[in-house]
Amino acid sequence: MTEGYEEVLAPNLYYDRHFKMDAVKILPGEYYVSARELLMVTVLGSCVCACVRDRLSGIGGINHFMLPDDKREEEERFGRSMRYGDYAMEILINQLIKLGARRKHLEAKVFGGGNVLTGFKSNMVGERNARFVLEYLATEGIPVVAKDLLGNNPRKVYFFPDSGRVLVKRLRSLHNDTIIERELTYRQRLRQSRVEGEIELFS
Image (cartoon, rainbow, N blue to C red; front, side):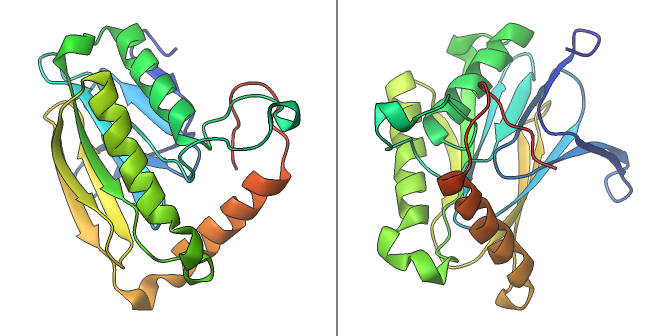
């Protein structure tokens, strides 16, 4: 907790010269919540992010996850992780409430789930992620006030939690290599790595 304002997992804080404000970059498996004016930025391929905020107080946060849930056998699990959507959503909502958000005032905007991992088309990773996040929010009674899901393009998402504004830029295939490589590497790590405790930090 930083001065009572933020819970931090994503470590990539910087000053955005274009928007002239403090910003944080969210990578796969990370989240960030804040009660102050702050820009939250992430780039999505088949991953999904949920931008959730208290519409009255402006307390808001974002996550970025790759898989809907952990389907491994119980004895193979070493802990819960932000890599999976069920935990990523749970921790995001809990941390927002910890900062002072009221559950009854929460609203969400969701993005991603693009079909960009050509090597994993049969798994329909993006479609599973998109379906999961909508079903999860419906079950929790949190209204989805905007969404941009599925399709074939990666997206860059700019979330301004204090106002609820979101800007989405669809990226052309010419610039997809870095995003695809990041998600393929991340997916490989998800399948191979052990989870030490409840939260993982990615460099």
